[in-house]
Length: 143
Image (cartoon, rainbow, N blue to C red; front, side, top):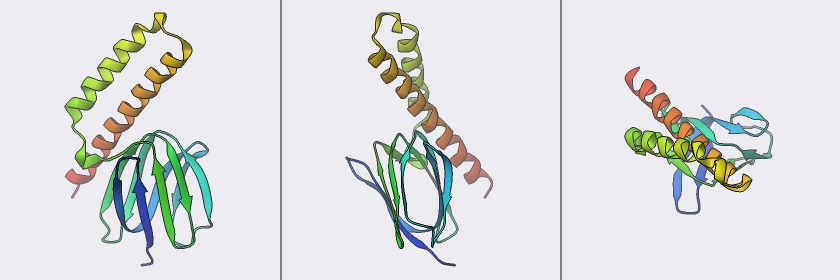
């Protein structure tokens, strides 16, 4: 089967660099799936879950909170604001962070629109992380 080079990086690190068979990503225009020989494109990512089919037929799940994807003839690059592999995530810490963000949102009557948007983005990020962990756990248990 034909593969394509893939790399996802954040300002802090390279999260994954590997040959893949396909990738599904959440963009602001909807979810897209990219296979080898896809037409070149650049798109804005939204917070969500990336699903990769690796060259060895294993699946990798990554939580992402915004960024860009560039699809070239022989390579896919994602520049993400944040990205975490599902296997690296701690569900209890995610739940605690989500609860703190939801509590801050309840008390948001006294904050401006920018702070409210930041709190909402934090909740969205934690929900995406939780979704990634749950999806990864289901994949792992089905093997």
